[in-house]
Length: 388
Image 1 (cartoon, rainbow, N blue to C red):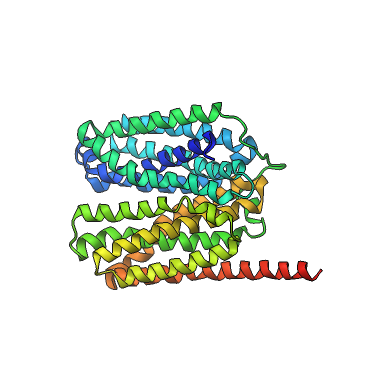
Image 2: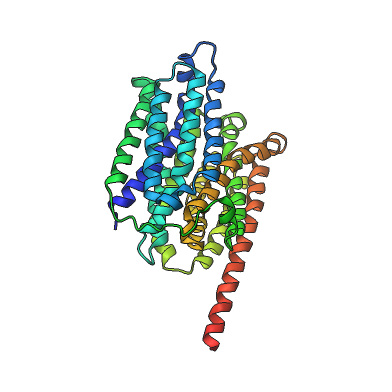
């Protein structure tokens, strides 16, 4: 059942994701507003946003455990609205960069709070279905956010993009504040990244998150350059490829119900094995653009389910420290954006996209091993119970 809670959480992810993705297609328009600034210079703001998000998620996300995730989300959205208004009225590039840094600080608190609230409001036995619905906000930001920002920049002005996002963030903050029955879980004692890391199972899951995200962001970073520079495909085709991936990510949302009906470790084994084959397929079809589209669709579906399983596992480990644990997840995720692009650059430049896809397949292997071990332990427990 789609509730007001889920709509608010999904929309919040969409707004946060739209801000993180919107700058790229409008960078040239933004640069024209600042004398002597290039589009590449404008993208510095996106890099600062990512670093600020990672730092905030690491050190500030645990606030949600102390004041409640719903209050943390509401306040973060208010800060995000102010940051976006500042970005939209920025008289210089340095102010724009500062505004995006502030937006990153807000996002680093908001994202873990959203994942925490998704776990809190989920009906027992429908955790994956609930999380899948909320994760579809990334699809909205990827497809609608990027395209709408480009259209607004052309028809009105690039500043209108940030004004619209600021209004949406403010509206959502008010919606979260007025919504009740979030099922809050307060921490008995103060939480922090260190206390979260001491929770049994958290380090191993975070290692899998790191490998999973590096595999994605590393390959995704060079998908566009491969299509345009190597295959000489049009910009439209490159955009279509990204849209196809986003569509696959969105199509997977209803599969959350299927995940709930099966044992999570078994689904994880199937998902990560499929993802390895998909990466190998992306490498095998690197020179065949239209077949590449098919694998991009499958890539989006498998990534959605894989991310769902990892987030669900993190949320189950210690409900009283969900904010701090999800903060570690977001910090790892945003660091992987930079690590993936950095590590894959020499592979792409010297060996090519196919080798990059192979590297991603190898990075997912540890996740498959982890899932197999979880399944083995689950079966061992069931055998012991049956013998008793």
